[in-house]
Length: 290
Image (cartoon, rainbow, N blue to C red; front, side, top):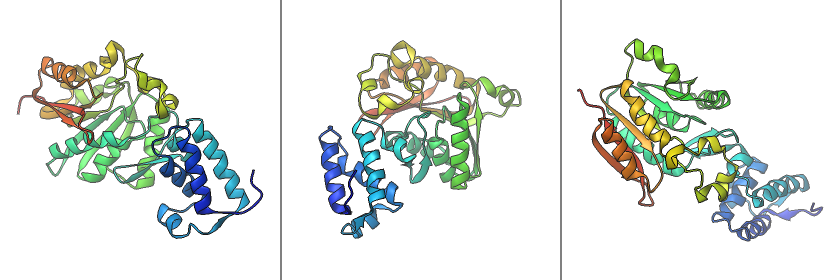
């Protein structure tokens, strides 16, 4: 541990160099986020006051986090938070880390949530990122998020409370299993969205980067990664209102297979949408009847 005081910009430069040596594609950003977390400031403050000296205790905390990042631990787990759709979300190792690619799903859902009110279901909510993003943009809609894990439900509820988003609720459910009363009462959904597990169990991404530290059960599905996607395509039919939409996030090479699953299940107007990198990331279809 350093005993001397050191300028913040020097500390950042050295930290970024250490992370570059690990092959990190976002070394400088990671170093800035970790230092901001330790100091309790934002990045604008860091840019403005980089010539200030850090105290020894702060340096020690920063270097401890930096060492864990060098070992591969995700920044979102080290800081306990991640921004998604402009919302600051608490994160835990029991849930997936929200990613920018998933904002493609949010954008596609918002384009179809044009009415002033409606009902929306998010399957496999995790941190609550998708449900909270959509609820924040559509305050007249009733949003329900479900997750198999109680710890994920509790985390999503804490995020909703912290953000003050009132038109969203979370419930424990194995996909549609706990929605029998909704179905029996005829309470169907205008939109159903999901970012389910879609990696095959031998996918090389499982041994790379942040994914190594994320819960495998939230990443991997059978049938080469397609099992849950196909299950949701079939199951959503019993819970969608006529004219309602099902939107599924999937892997970059799975668009054709998911479109086929949607078409085989009877959906109409089936299309896929690309993420910012140009990869097919979301496939969607309309349940007929309206």
